[in-house]
Image (cartoon, rainbow, N blue to C red; front, side, top):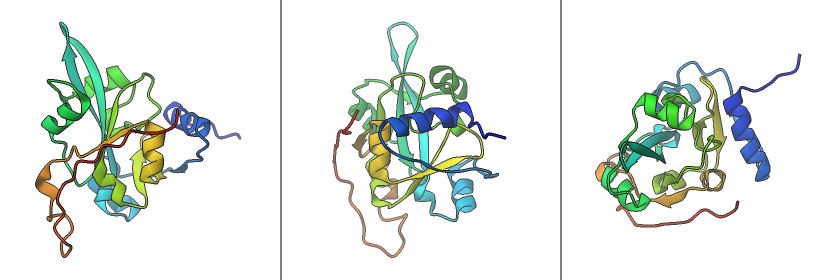
Length: 190
């Protein structure tokens, strides 16, 4: 019997393949409803879990424009920072229905790339501190392991400080206090 991947996984595999990347995909996870459960199932730190969040900006009368933010599982997005980086004047988190309608995936399984439409993607710079990060594949119970630089290239993301400042010094007990730095890095590649 030939294994045929789910459509969500197939899309991210195709995107990665076009860019010369082979993905490390893990299947069969039962607890992936939130970053904490996913981290526990993988035996990794919650900061290594990529939350792919869909935000929307309103343009014109009722027209919603999606913006995706890739953020560490230990952080929350600062809407004013995301608005400034994305160039949107007003932005809010999408509802579950809006995320599915706009992007074609359930919010909990949203992959960081391989979407059915072009969408600006912002990646929080905090993810860059890890050797490996883990993200949803678009299919429940499956995740992919990838280096942050590769994730940036695959998602064609702009790297910027979009997390709330509440993580400063609190997440890494026993380590030096980290101050946020503005570092914008445009993705390279096609």
